[in-house]
Length: 327
Ligand code: PBG
Image (cartoon, rainbow, N blue to C red; front, side, top):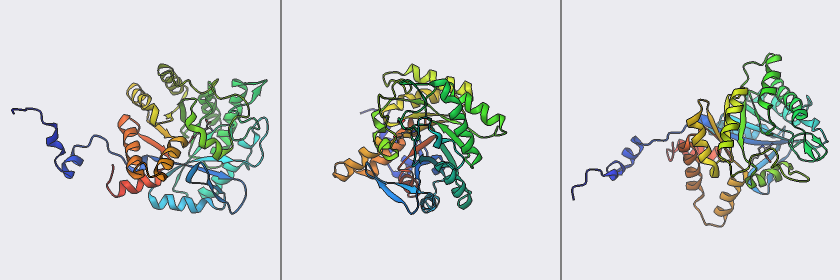
């Protein structure tokens, strides 16, 4: 047989396979989402997200230490308040749950990098991502509250803010507000390409943020649409977004790929709660090899073009990278 092309030549040994690897990853690109709630002495497991916990502010440092030891240096904070109201005031008060967690965490672990999720849904009594006008989410009325929330996070020590509400114009509103308060250097990671997805189910249990009526389809994107995702990404870049996020990850890698090719900003992908829960459930049944699945999902996301990976498996991935199993 006179074969000229023999792709198998480059697969002959582990050393060679590693030499020709096209996707290389690093722990510094991992972000770990973390839930913080009111109270003291609390570390409670989230039923739909086995292995993930809600922490009270005093317990948070234990987890931060584990992350730091694992080599995961960036976290994304989500707040779970005790009280909710119509206008989500818990999101932007100075002593809100995220603001207090930030002050405490920064004091104890100043070298970690703190990103905050900026949204209203955990704080509104109706569970929508903005304030209501009748049964509609009022876009423009929500913008100033989002900006106020982002500013209060930055004042409490956030290094970066990540708006996830999907209101039009929110990146611009947040950028203007941060700039006029002297925070011109604080980056915005926009959840720009965020779809209305059933993959968020376990998160809404975790954060108690499911809408009390209707759904989020009037602000999050229809998952049939690809070109619209590009429009959202480009609009947010024009408004001043420094990093563009695609969410969820696994079923949306076409978007990661397209956006990384069509733009020149870093692209982040968020492997969301439903992705995590599916892996955990199948692994518990003994139907999949959990560790290998975690690696494949991560590498697939980077291979598609993500530079940043937000995942509940951040500590596990950091370990696999240390062991040379991936990366
Ligand atoms: C909104 C927000 C959500 C998630 C991150 N930010 C929930 C939603 O849009 O309903 C989902 C994250 C996940 O599922 O892991 N604050």
